[in-house]
Amino acid sequence: MSFNFKLLNQENNARAGEFETPHGSILTPTFAPVGTQATVKTLTPAQLESTGANLILANTYHLFLRPGADLIAEMGGLHHFMHWDKPILTDSGGFQVFSLAQMRKIDQDGVTFRSHIDGSKQRLTPEIAIQIQEQLGADIIMAFDECAPPYDETYSLQAMERTHAWAIRCKNARTRDDQALFGIVQGGIFPELRKQSAEFISSIELPGYAIGGLSVGETKKEMYHSLEIVNSILPIQKPRYLMGVGTPEDLIYGVQRGVDIFDCVLATRLARHAAALTNTGRLNLMNSKFSRDPKPIDQACSCYTCRSFSRAYLRHLIMAKETLSGTLISIHNIHMLQDLMRNIRQAILENRFEEFSRTYLSNYEYKPGVAADQILSPSSEIL
Image (tube, rainbow, N blue to C red):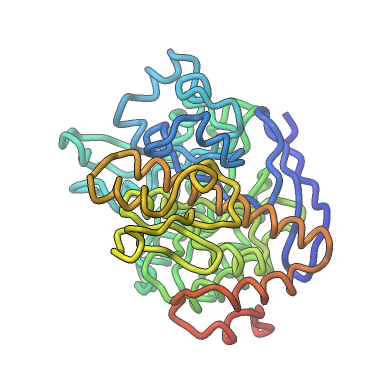
Protein backbone atom coordinates (compact mmCIF):
# COMPACT_ATOMS: atom_id res chain seq x y z
CA MET A 1 0.00 0.00 0.00
CA SER A 2 1.09 3.56 -0.70
CA PHE A 3 0.87 5.64 2.47
CA ASN A 4 0.02 8.98 0.93
CA PHE A 5 0.18 12.17 3.00
CA LYS A 6 -1.73 15.07 1.48
CA LEU A 7 -0.79 18.47 2.81
CA LEU A 8 -4.02 20.45 2.38
CA ASN A 9 -2.99 23.79 3.85
CA GLN A 10 -0.17 25.37 5.81
CA GLU A 11 -0.28 28.55 7.88
CA ASN A 12 3.29 29.45 8.78
CA ASN A 13 4.48 26.10 10.24
CA ALA A 14 1.03 24.79 11.25
CA ARG A 15 -0.22 22.11 8.84
CA ALA A 16 -3.54 20.46 7.97
CA GLY A 17 -3.32 17.20 6.08
CA GLU A 18 -4.62 13.70 5.50
CA PHE A 19 -2.68 10.45 5.91
CA GLU A 20 -4.05 7.32 4.25
CA THR A 21 -3.85 3.96 6.05
CA PRO A 22 -5.43 0.52 5.46
CA HIS A 23 -8.02 1.26 8.16
CA GLY A 24 -8.98 4.72 7.00
CA SER A 25 -7.58 8.20 6.62
CA ILE A 26 -6.13 10.13 9.55
CA LEU A 27 -7.05 13.82 9.41
CA THR A 28 -4.17 15.85 10.78
CA PRO A 29 -3.33 17.44 13.09
CA THR A 30 -4.69 14.71 15.34
CA PHE A 31 -4.46 13.41 18.90
CA ALA A 32 -4.29 9.67 19.57
CA PRO A 33 -5.53 8.32 22.92
CA VAL A 34 -3.23 5.66 24.38
CA GLY A 35 -4.41 2.04 24.63
CA THR A 36 -1.31 0.57 26.25
CA GLN A 37 -2.67 -2.93 26.86
CA ALA A 38 -4.90 -3.02 23.74
CA THR A 39 -7.47 -0.93 25.60
CA VAL A 40 -7.88 2.74 26.37
CA LYS A 41 -8.32 2.49 30.12
CA THR A 42 -11.95 2.43 31.40
CA LEU A 43 -13.45 2.85 27.89
CA THR A 44 -15.11 0.45 25.46
CA PRO A 45 -14.30 0.88 21.76
CA ALA A 46 -17.82 2.26 21.22
CA GLN A 47 -17.32 4.86 23.95
CA LEU A 48 -13.95 5.77 22.48
CA GLU A 49 -15.43 6.13 19.00
CA SER A 50 -18.12 8.44 20.40
CA THR A 51 -15.39 10.93 21.37
CA GLY A 52 -14.37 11.32 17.72
CA ALA A 53 -11.05 9.51 18.09
CA ASN A 54 -9.92 7.80 14.90
CA LEU A 55 -6.35 6.82 15.82
CA ILE A 56 -5.16 5.05 18.96
CA LEU A 57 -1.76 3.91 20.19
CA ALA A 58 -0.96 0.45 21.57
CA ASN A 59 2.27 -0.53 23.29
CA THR A 60 4.63 -3.08 21.77
CA TYR A 61 6.60 -3.72 24.96
CA HIS A 62 3.55 -4.46 27.09
CA LEU A 63 1.78 -6.60 24.47
CA PHE A 64 5.02 -8.51 23.78
CA LEU A 65 5.19 -9.47 27.46
CA ARG A 66 1.45 -10.06 27.90
CA PRO A 67 -0.47 -11.69 26.21
CA GLY A 68 2.25 -12.09 23.56
CA ALA A 69 2.39 -11.19 19.88
CA ASP A 70 1.86 -14.82 18.81
CA LEU A 71 -1.50 -14.96 20.58
CA ILE A 72 -2.65 -11.63 19.14
CA ALA A 73 -1.66 -12.77 15.64
CA GLU A 74 -3.57 -16.01 16.22
CA MET A 75 -6.63 -13.93 17.19
CA GLY A 76 -6.51 -12.07 13.88
CA GLY A 77 -4.28 -9.13 14.79
CA LEU A 78 -4.73 -6.15 17.06
CA HIS A 79 -7.69 -4.60 15.24
CA HIS A 80 -9.75 -7.78 15.56
CA PHE A 81 -8.44 -8.63 19.04
CA MET A 82 -9.56 -5.30 20.55
CA HIS A 83 -12.49 -4.71 18.19
CA TRP A 84 -11.22 -1.42 16.77
CA ASP A 85 -11.56 -0.96 13.02
CA LYS A 86 -9.87 2.44 12.74
CA PRO A 87 -6.13 3.16 12.46
CA ILE A 88 -3.76 1.90 15.17
CA LEU A 89 -0.19 3.03 15.88
CA THR A 90 2.25 0.89 17.86
CA ASP A 91 5.43 2.20 19.38
CA SER A 92 8.55 0.03 19.22
CA GLY A 93 8.89 -0.66 22.94
CA GLY A 94 12.14 1.25 23.18
CA PHE A 95 10.96 3.83 25.70
CA GLN A 96 9.44 1.19 28.00
CA VAL A 97 12.57 -0.97 27.85
CA PHE A 98 14.60 1.95 29.13
CA SER A 99 12.01 3.20 31.66
CA LEU A 100 10.34 0.06 33.02
CA ALA A 101 12.50 -2.99 32.37
CA GLN A 102 14.80 -4.34 35.07
CA MET A 103 18.52 -5.16 34.83
CA ARG A 104 18.75 -4.08 31.20
CA LYS A 105 21.98 -4.55 29.23
CA ILE A 106 22.40 -2.55 26.04
CA ASP A 107 24.69 -3.57 23.22
CA GLN A 108 24.97 -2.58 19.58
CA ASP A 109 22.67 -5.42 18.56
CA GLY A 110 19.82 -4.71 20.99
CA VAL A 111 18.75 -4.89 24.63
CA THR A 112 18.57 -7.77 27.10
CA PHE A 113 16.34 -7.09 30.09
CA ARG A 114 14.14 -8.62 32.72
CA SER A 115 10.38 -8.17 32.56
CA HIS A 116 8.91 -5.76 35.09
CA ILE A 117 5.98 -8.21 35.37
CA ASP A 118 7.64 -11.50 36.36
CA GLY A 119 11.39 -10.92 36.11
CA SER A 120 11.77 -13.22 33.12
CA LYS A 121 14.76 -12.63 30.83
CA GLN A 122 13.80 -11.03 27.51
CA ARG A 123 15.55 -9.74 24.41
CA LEU A 124 14.58 -6.99 21.98
CA THR A 125 16.48 -6.10 18.83
CA PRO A 126 15.37 -3.98 15.88
CA GLU A 127 14.44 -7.14 14.00
CA ILE A 128 12.43 -8.57 16.90
CA ALA A 129 10.63 -5.24 17.43
CA ILE A 130 9.57 -5.23 13.77
CA GLN A 131 8.51 -8.89 13.91
CA ILE A 132 6.32 -8.18 16.96
CA GLN A 133 4.72 -5.14 15.34
CA GLU A 134 4.05 -7.08 12.16
CA GLN A 135 2.29 -9.73 14.23
CA LEU A 136 0.26 -7.05 16.00
CA GLY A 137 -0.72 -5.63 12.61
CA ALA A 138 -0.90 -1.89 13.39
CA ASP A 139 -1.21 0.60 10.54
CA ILE A 140 1.73 2.73 11.75
CA ILE A 141 4.75 1.10 13.40
CA MET A 142 7.87 2.59 14.98
CA ALA A 143 11.55 1.85 14.51
CA PHE A 144 13.29 0.52 17.63
CA ASP A 145 15.08 3.40 19.35
CA GLU A 146 16.90 4.29 22.54
CA CYS A 147 15.59 7.16 24.65
CA ALA A 148 18.30 8.81 26.74
CA PRO A 149 18.00 11.17 29.74
CA PRO A 150 17.58 14.68 28.29
CA TYR A 151 20.61 16.33 29.92
CA ASP A 152 23.28 13.64 29.48
CA GLU A 153 25.08 14.67 26.29
CA THR A 154 27.47 11.71 26.15
CA TYR A 155 24.65 9.20 26.60
CA SER A 156 22.41 11.15 24.19
CA LEU A 157 25.09 10.89 21.48
CA GLN A 158 25.53 7.14 22.01
CA ALA A 159 21.77 6.54 22.09
CA MET A 160 21.28 8.66 18.96
CA GLU A 161 23.91 6.71 17.03
CA ARG A 162 22.35 3.40 18.09
CA THR A 163 18.91 4.73 17.14
CA HIS A 164 20.19 5.60 13.66
CA ALA A 165 21.76 2.18 13.10
CA TRP A 166 18.66 0.45 14.43
CA ALA A 167 16.36 2.49 12.15
CA ILE A 168 18.15 1.13 9.08
CA ARG A 169 17.94 -2.42 10.44
CA CYS A 170 14.21 -1.95 11.12
CA LYS A 171 13.62 -0.84 7.55
CA ASN A 172 15.56 -3.83 6.21
CA ALA A 173 13.66 -6.23 8.50
CA ARG A 174 10.20 -5.29 7.25
CA THR A 175 8.22 -7.96 5.39
CA ARG A 176 4.79 -6.28 5.22
CA ASP A 177 3.96 -3.42 2.87
CA ASP A 178 0.66 -2.54 4.56
CA GLN A 179 2.32 -0.91 7.58
CA ALA A 180 3.90 2.54 7.64
CA LEU A 181 7.28 2.47 9.39
CA PHE A 182 8.27 5.75 11.06
CA GLY A 183 11.86 6.52 12.04
CA ILE A 184 12.47 8.33 15.34
CA VAL A 185 14.58 11.44 15.91
CA GLN A 186 16.53 11.50 19.20
CA GLY A 187 19.28 13.74 20.63
CA GLY A 188 18.09 14.95 24.04
CA ILE A 189 17.91 18.72 24.43
CA PHE A 190 21.15 19.29 22.52
CA PRO A 191 20.56 21.37 19.35
CA GLU A 192 23.45 19.94 17.34
CA LEU A 193 22.46 16.36 18.15
CA ARG A 194 18.83 17.04 17.26
CA LYS A 195 19.97 18.57 13.97
CA GLN A 196 22.20 15.58 13.17
CA SER A 197 19.46 13.11 14.07
CA ALA A 198 16.79 14.87 12.02
CA GLU A 199 19.09 14.96 9.01
CA PHE A 200 20.03 11.29 9.31
CA ILE A 201 16.50 9.98 9.92
CA SER A 202 15.23 12.17 7.06
CA SER A 203 17.76 10.54 4.75
CA ILE A 204 16.06 7.16 5.26
CA GLU A 205 13.11 7.05 2.89
CA LEU A 206 10.13 6.26 5.14
CA PRO A 207 6.38 7.07 5.12
CA GLY A 208 6.70 9.31 8.19
CA TYR A 209 8.92 10.47 11.03
CA ALA A 210 8.55 10.62 14.81
CA ILE A 211 10.18 12.90 17.37
CA GLY A 212 11.11 11.02 20.54
CA GLY A 213 12.87 11.81 23.79
CA LEU A 214 10.82 14.92 24.63
CA SER A 215 8.49 15.60 27.57
CA VAL A 216 10.81 13.45 29.68
CA GLY A 217 12.03 16.06 32.15
CA GLU A 218 13.25 18.97 30.05
CA THR A 219 11.65 22.42 30.26
CA LYS A 220 8.83 23.43 27.95
CA LYS A 221 11.08 26.03 26.32
CA GLU A 222 13.70 23.35 25.58
CA MET A 223 11.07 21.03 24.15
CA TYR A 224 9.61 23.68 21.87
CA HIS A 225 13.04 24.76 20.66
CA SER A 226 13.92 21.15 19.86
CA LEU A 227 10.72 20.90 17.81
CA GLU A 228 11.68 24.00 15.85
CA ILE A 229 15.08 22.52 15.00
CA VAL A 230 13.76 19.10 14.04
CA ASN A 231 10.74 20.25 12.03
CA SER A 232 12.84 22.71 10.04
CA ILE A 233 14.68 19.65 8.70
CA LEU A 234 12.11 16.84 8.45
CA PRO A 235 10.51 16.51 5.00
CA ILE A 236 7.51 18.76 4.45
CA GLN A 237 5.65 16.06 2.49
CA LYS A 238 5.73 13.46 5.30
CA PRO A 239 3.72 13.34 8.58
CA ARG A 240 5.49 14.25 11.83
CA TYR A 241 4.60 12.54 15.09
CA LEU A 242 5.53 13.97 18.50
CA MET A 243 5.59 11.06 20.94
CA GLY A 244 4.04 11.22 24.41
CA VAL A 245 2.79 14.83 24.44
CA GLY A 246 -0.84 15.82 24.93
CA THR A 247 -1.73 18.75 27.20
CA PRO A 248 -3.97 21.34 25.50
CA GLU A 249 -1.22 23.97 25.49
CA ASP A 250 1.34 21.50 24.13
CA LEU A 251 -1.03 20.56 21.30
CA ILE A 252 -1.31 24.24 20.36
CA TYR A 253 2.43 24.91 20.59
CA GLY A 254 3.29 21.63 18.86
CA VAL A 255 1.01 22.31 15.91
CA GLN A 256 2.42 25.81 15.72
CA ARG A 257 5.85 24.21 15.24
CA GLY A 258 4.80 21.76 12.53
CA VAL A 259 3.63 18.62 14.38
CA ASP A 260 0.87 16.51 12.81
CA ILE A 261 0.27 13.62 15.25
CA PHE A 262 0.31 13.51 19.06
CA ASP A 263 -0.35 10.84 21.69
CA CYS A 264 -0.45 10.90 25.49
CA VAL A 265 -1.84 8.96 28.46
CA LEU A 266 -2.66 12.20 30.28
CA ALA A 267 -6.37 12.46 29.40
CA THR A 268 -7.33 9.11 30.92
CA ARG A 269 -4.77 9.24 33.73
CA LEU A 270 -6.14 12.59 34.91
CA ALA A 271 -9.67 11.23 34.65
CA ARG A 272 -8.86 8.33 36.97
CA HIS A 273 -7.58 10.90 39.47
CA ALA A 274 -10.71 13.11 39.37
CA ALA A 275 -9.33 15.80 37.04
CA ALA A 276 -11.26 17.09 34.05
CA LEU A 277 -9.78 18.96 31.12
CA THR A 278 -11.55 22.07 29.87
CA ASN A 279 -10.71 24.81 27.41
CA THR A 280 -9.97 27.16 30.31
CA GLY A 281 -7.90 24.76 32.44
CA ARG A 282 -8.29 21.70 34.67
CA LEU A 283 -11.03 21.05 37.19
CA ASN A 284 -10.34 19.02 40.34
CA LEU A 285 -13.74 17.39 40.77
CA MET A 286 -12.88 16.23 44.28
CA ASN A 287 -13.17 19.85 45.37
CA SER A 288 -16.05 20.32 47.81
CA LYS A 289 -17.32 23.34 45.88
CA PHE A 290 -18.66 20.91 43.25
CA SER A 291 -20.74 18.87 45.73
CA ARG A 292 -23.95 20.76 44.84
CA ASP A 293 -22.97 22.02 41.41
CA PRO A 294 -25.70 21.17 38.85
CA LYS A 295 -23.63 22.20 35.83
CA PRO A 296 -21.83 19.72 33.57
CA ILE A 297 -18.02 19.72 33.41
CA ASP A 298 -18.25 22.12 30.46
CA GLN A 299 -21.53 23.65 29.33
CA ALA A 300 -20.17 24.08 25.80
CA CYS A 301 -19.14 20.41 25.49
CA SER A 302 -21.33 17.94 23.57
CA CYS A 303 -19.83 14.71 24.95
CA TYR A 304 -22.04 12.06 26.56
CA THR A 305 -20.83 12.97 30.04
CA CYS A 306 -21.59 16.67 29.71
CA ARG A 307 -24.96 15.99 28.07
CA SER A 308 -25.99 13.66 30.88
CA PHE A 309 -24.34 14.32 34.25
CA SER A 310 -23.64 17.13 36.69
CA ARG A 311 -20.42 17.97 38.46
CA ALA A 312 -22.24 17.05 41.68
CA TYR A 313 -22.93 13.53 40.42
CA LEU A 314 -19.36 13.05 39.21
CA ARG A 315 -18.01 14.20 42.58
CA HIS A 316 -20.36 11.76 44.30
CA LEU A 317 -18.97 8.90 42.20
CA ILE A 318 -15.42 9.97 42.99
CA MET A 319 -16.03 10.20 46.73
CA ALA A 320 -17.83 6.84 46.68
CA LYS A 321 -14.86 5.36 44.78
CA GLU A 322 -17.11 4.19 41.95
CA THR A 323 -15.14 3.26 38.82
CA LEU A 324 -17.80 4.88 36.64
CA SER A 325 -16.24 8.24 37.51
CA GLY A 326 -13.07 7.32 35.60
CA THR A 327 -15.12 6.24 32.59
CA LEU A 328 -17.27 9.36 32.44
CA ILE A 329 -14.41 11.80 32.95
CA SER A 330 -12.26 9.90 30.41
CA ILE A 331 -15.06 10.23 27.83
CA HIS A 332 -15.11 13.97 28.45
CA ASN A 333 -11.33 14.47 28.50
CA ILE A 334 -10.72 12.62 25.24
CA HIS A 335 -13.74 14.28 23.59
CA MET A 336 -12.42 17.67 24.68
CA LEU A 337 -9.01 17.02 23.08
CA GLN A 338 -10.60 15.69 19.89
CA ASP A 339 -12.75 18.82 19.67
CA LEU A 340 -9.67 20.97 20.20
CA MET A 341 -7.83 19.21 17.37
CA ARG A 342 -10.82 19.54 15.06
CA ASN A 343 -10.98 23.27 15.81
CA ILE A 344 -7.23 23.63 15.27
CA ARG A 345 -7.46 21.81 11.94
CA GLN A 346 -10.37 23.97 10.76
CA ALA A 347 -8.54 27.13 11.79
CA ILE A 348 -5.49 26.08 9.73
CA LEU A 349 -7.66 25.30 6.71
CA GLU A 350 -9.17 28.79 7.01
CA ASN A 351 -5.78 30.52 7.60
CA ARG A 352 -6.75 31.77 11.07
CA PHE A 353 -4.75 29.43 13.32
CA GLU A 354 -2.53 32.15 14.79
CA GLU A 355 -5.60 34.12 15.80
CA PHE A 356 -7.24 30.97 17.18
CA SER A 357 -4.18 29.98 19.21
CA ARG A 358 -3.75 33.44 20.74
CA THR A 359 -7.38 33.61 21.77
CA TYR A 360 -7.36 30.06 23.13
CA LEU A 361 -4.22 30.48 25.20
CA SER A 362 -5.29 33.85 26.57
CA ASN A 363 -8.29 32.09 28.16
CA TYR A 364 -6.42 28.98 29.30
CA GLU A 365 -4.85 28.67 32.75
CA TYR A 366 -1.71 26.56 32.73
CA LYS A 367 1.82 26.42 34.08
CA PRO A 368 4.13 25.64 31.17
CA GLY A 369 7.33 26.54 33.00
CA VAL A 370 7.87 29.65 30.87
CA ALA A 371 5.77 32.71 30.16
CA ALA A 372 3.34 32.35 27.28
CA ASP A 373 4.66 35.39 25.43
CA GLN A 374 8.12 33.80 25.38
CA ILE A 375 7.02 30.66 23.54
CA LEU A 376 3.91 31.57 21.57
CA SER A 377 5.78 32.42 18.38
CA PRO A 378 8.40 30.01 17.02
CA SER A 379 11.94 31.28 17.27
CA SER A 380 13.70 32.50 14.16
CA GLU A 381 17.06 31.49 15.59
CA ILE A 382 17.26 27.80 14.70
CA LEU A 383 20.25 25.86 13.45
